[in-house]
Amino acid sequence: MLRRLIRWAAFKSLKFQRLYVWLCRPSGPEFAKLIKHHGLFYSMGENCSINPDSVIGDAPWVRMGNNVRLASCTLLAHDGVINMLMNAYNVKLDAVGKIDIGNNVFIGNRATVLRGVTIGDNVVVAAGAVVANDVPSNSVVGGVPARFICKTEELVERLKHESEALPWYPLILQREGGHDSALEPELDRLRKRHWFGAPSSSKPPLNPAASVVPRVGGARL
Image 1 (cartoon, rainbow, N blue to C red):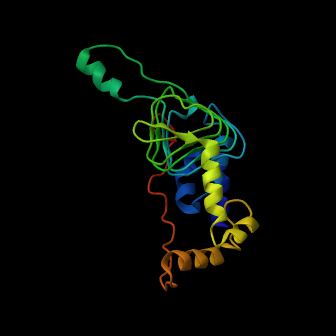
Image 2 (cartoon, rainbow, N blue to C red; image 1 turned 135 degrees about the vertical axis):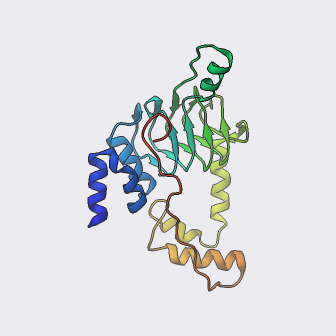
């Protein structure tokens, strides 16, 4: 009941956002609904997911298409170095830019997208990548700075072959979406037996609370 009340309050007013994230631990799709509800991005499409510990700089300068997944990444539409440079060199500077993300895009854990970048459709940004230049559609990029790795279709085919070879693939075919709570216990058992050979008595750790709670404003969302 308390969590339901906090969720209602967060959707009414952003001042409850931090409490909502801390207490309710919303999923990525749920948190994206909150962001879209308050219109914090320039625009956001449908079926998006944003991990609550993602860092979004200058949210109004971010445009996001349909089926975009942000996995604890950073979007920086500004460059804070200008404050130091203006004082050091006695100049007036401006270093801001939009971040334009197309449809069907995944941005991996701890990846960073910098100002002025346009990401096309059907793109995968690997974990830890730093994206400083535009990414063409149908591309997988990674590294620092991010570089082309392969076509997205090639990644799909590779993962498809890997998946079909798994002993638990018949269960994957039955799964609803990317997670099915009814099947997860059996999937977990089969994976452990396949990887480690013997069952383990240890229990998996609980998901920790988000270590960084996003804020609305100039620096974070």
